[in-house]
Figure 1: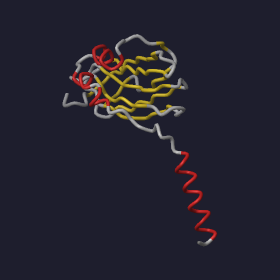
Figure 2: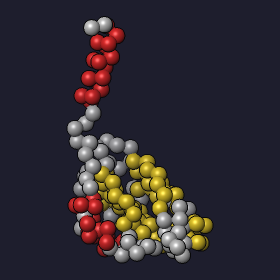
Figure 3: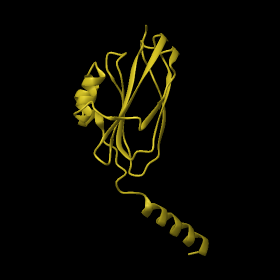
Figure 4: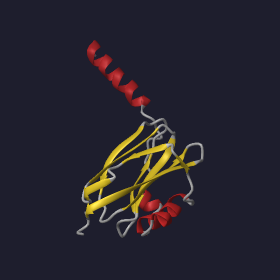
Length: 150
């Protein structure tokens, strides 16, 4: 075997061995099916985490105060708290849950996504920390033109 091939295969083997074996995401549609049917944030959060309580101020939610078009509202979620999961909810649509993520250990949480809202509502982000505590933030987003046919 040539030296370059040997070094290339060796580097690839080392890199592959460094990928964490615990990099598995939970399918919340299967494990928390009731959450996706709830019409209110409180009900969906309770189905997801068992409580609606959480420490405020540790998760930052950046969303427009006024969204001209509810069909595509950009939001950013950022925190330095070591979370094991995070979920987004709103009360503007018939189903409250927007998204839920499993967070790999030690990951940087700085997520950008877009969501639809048919009317003005609070957006709630709640996460479960590896310390067992719940963290949350709530921000009202006003919608001028509904994004769900309204």
